[in-house]
Image 1 (cartoon, rainbow, N blue to C red):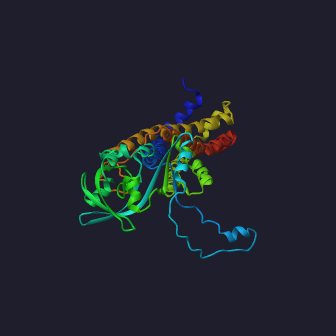
Image 2: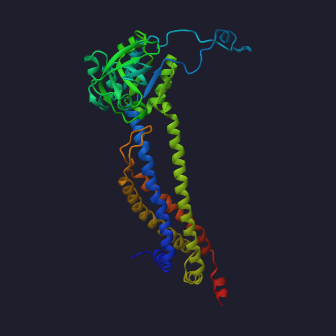
Image 3: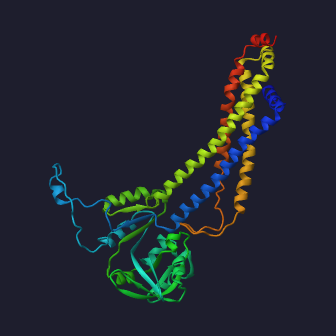
Length: 417
């Protein structure tokens, strides 16, 4: 047995089935599109972040400083009107000083894995084809604890770098650009003019196009020989047990050692900021749809109030209070919003299913996709969309419901007479 207020509300809505259906459909479309678009956007964003966290180091220490060193003249006159301009950089061998001690100290920190590296630009040649790339010198035993190069290899093994003289591992895109494959011999030339021949012992597909298309890996000692920088490293890569602490720990390391230290959030700040804008646009569009649906609910309940003025007078003469009348018409809005939320969840499921069936050719870009939309299946969009729809419907119904509650039955009867 339904409460009397709910029964009356259902009767009112049932008398105007077409308008009620349109209002429910408007709410449902807003909720459905919200669920579908959230799944699409969140799917790509989550995939991107997971790929970055999985492939790239969580923190990178570089052999540079965030700000130029303060000149002695400025230090000597800290409170004076001193300005130093045109300082010519001093010629010195780039690299992280006392790197081994720094690595040993960082390894003492709990939940931190550390790997040294030497990264520099080289010119790779295979036959008559030349391609510029970043050559990363690595220590395989340490690198497996920091990156997932071993897991991402689609041909060869990481240990082949040590068992093969001058072995090299190429990103899959870089190998395609060179036209080289497993077992082929390529030549790497450094900016100093030194050249070495390398045998391709592995291919890597990380899913990050910038890495797959432009990076190669060799043993650290070999990279140091090629670059003419013995015992020098210019990057220390860290992987954390708790990735959420990357930014905090990066700032702590930079204060301790002075070198520029970037967390994965800072390194990908531009893309992550685009995600914020993307989400803002999505929420604005879907919010506008729900707002239009809310105006539809306001319109239908205002019409019901106008048509049911005599009924309101009769209800009040029978002892219904203003609170009872307010409750009846507010329930009408809540019923429309709830029905729209439920229908919207079904529409959202249909949209997600439809998007999941779409397949397209891989177009490249910053991420190598799976040939289709990457969708996230999360519960919170259903809950958030439903709550927003119900609240918007309740607010849209409240204004005409309040007007109905304020009607004077005597004035209604006199007007009818």
